[in-house]
Image (cartoon, rainbow, N blue to C red; front, side, top):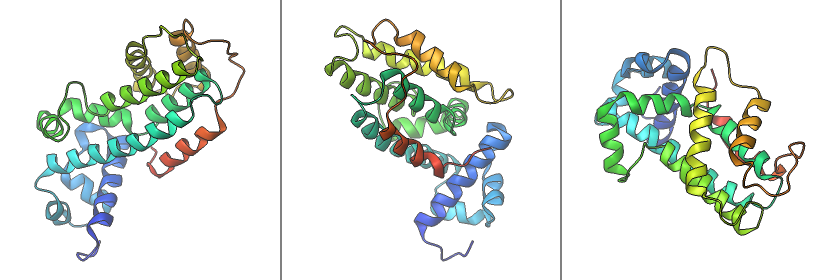
Length: 221
């Protein structure tokens, strides 16, 4: 990587390299040298743009949270289209089928990283998962307003329940990601008591294809 490369380009290349290392080799293998080797650049490039490795990791997580914020707006706009179960199945598969599971493990494993993230985004909860829960709760509230889920549905409880169940499904990488039917079955079980008049055979909103396309940039194992 040329030393004169633009900061934005260098950041994104380093972020993508870090995600590839995470997905391929796991949290324990993620070091500054591993990242720069994966990116094909000198180690000094990373330290030229970031105070230290935890600062780099914090910026990586914040960048991915910013992407999630954009996807939350798309999900809210999908309310009232397709089916609630279909939309939730798509967004949860998209979220946990990407690098999110590995990033959550990274946050849990590094105290200094969590401290920097809390300073950047004060508040309770685990970064990334907190924003994902807010995204789901906002969508469910929009569907509740449209009458597609029960008026008394507790969306602030349903959202983390969906997240926790999804995390368990996707956390075991050895067997590969769960089948779509397994994700849909889990979503149906969690929201069956509040969803109104849906068939499992109905499809997710075509509009939500745009959200999945947004994640195409994220490296896969």
